[in-house]
Structure formats: structure tokens, C-alpha cells
Image (cartoon, rainbow, N blue to C red; front, side):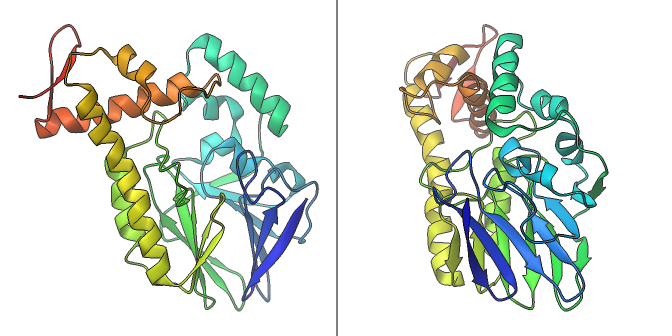
Length: 294
């Protein structure tokens, strides 16, 4: 179930839990000639809007959970279209061990009901414009969360959907094999330059009105990412191996248990270690022991 909220000719279908995982905020753009649905979420049990087109911001299960309700041409950035089209490709990008993969596949099947494949998913590029009549929806590539993660700017309403640059206190997520801390930081900086009336997120924060408020929240969100790096440097005051860092946790709280947690922690730690070694803040040796530089 969901409650629609209106922002010009853009509707945001807000689930009962406010868009917390596993749910999210589905965005609908009502043009005079075509209707575009973006990231149909688990809260949908049908096509409630008569969509003509679908766009998926990136290849994660919560963003495609409701896609099977829409028998329409579907689009995603070409770097993520394979993950939208194939559940196995989506799982490949998580970098899971065999036992983890089996558990995550079962969890996704049980919780999200995603079919093994989605037909007719077309890959598009940064800057693609959906012409909807009296509305346009322009795709803006915002990598980091995934390789092909994108936002959508709807004009003339001035509604900028930033997808999983979601402003939550949990902070940015970049635990896929195709994720990048550097790209995520660049994408955060890029969205800060784009003026809009409304900024829509897929998860709890929903829609933020006004560029000043959006940028204030975006700054805190960016600082959350960098705080993980600061914590890691402090942790490496004594020599540690990767498995020590994974167990220490940079992303999830110690009580959180799920089959994907270690994979996310491994990839997150690897990405931060690469940055810290490149900057000279951390050193490593041939035994893959990491320590803070003196």
C-alpha cells in the first residue's frame, strides 16, 4: 500500500513505512502524451498509473520489485541494464561467496518476488531525454552506488529524483563490485550543482523542498561517508588484516545479521583502503597487513 504525494505533474507513491528498506518511493511523471514510472517498488501490487514507459535508476532488487506489474518498454543506464534484466547478473555484482549467494538469492525470491529475467530492458546513456509531451525527464548519470546509478530531472516542474543518494543518516552505500567511493563523492558534488524545486529520494527522506535545504542535508550525508574513512584510520593504529576490518564493521552495526553484510563490509573496506593507501595515510605489506602510516 502507498499514499500518493503530488509535486506538479510528478507523483511520489510513498509506502506505509515511509520508504524504508525493503520498500521505496516510486516516482511517476505524468506527461500530456506519456506517463513514465521510475523505480516501481515493493509497495505496488499492480500498475496503478497506466504507465507507458519505465525507467530503473539502477540494478538493485528494491528498485525493480514492482517492475513485473508493468508490461511496458523499460530502460536503465547501459552499465546497469544487465542487472535489471537478469537476477543472476544482479547477484554477480554483489561479490558474494557461494554460501552467501544462495542465501541472498533465496531472500530476494521470498521478500521481493523478482522473476529470474525481465524482458525488453534497453540500455541508455547519460543525458537521455524521455519526451512525454508537456514534460521531459532527463537521465543524469550518478555513479558510485553502482556503475550505472542515475537520477532523473523532470522539467518544467523542477523535480530532481536522486534515487539512492538518499540523504539517510545510515549514509551512502557502495558495497557492490562496481561501486566506487571516488565516483560517489563526485556524484554527490555534482547533484549539489543542480538547482531544483524538489529533490526526491527513494528511501526514507522522501522529497526535500528547496536547494538550500537539500544541500545542507547532502553535506551531512557526504560527511557520513568520510567519517567511515576516519574511523578506519583510527582502527589501523594497530596492524590489521582485511578480515579484522570486516569484523569491526564500517557500515553496519554489530547486531545486524544478514547474508550480504560481510560482502558489503569487504567491498567497503577494500575501497577505503585503496584510497588511503593512495593518499599515503595507510600502508600495507606483502602479507596484506594494513596499518596507519606513521
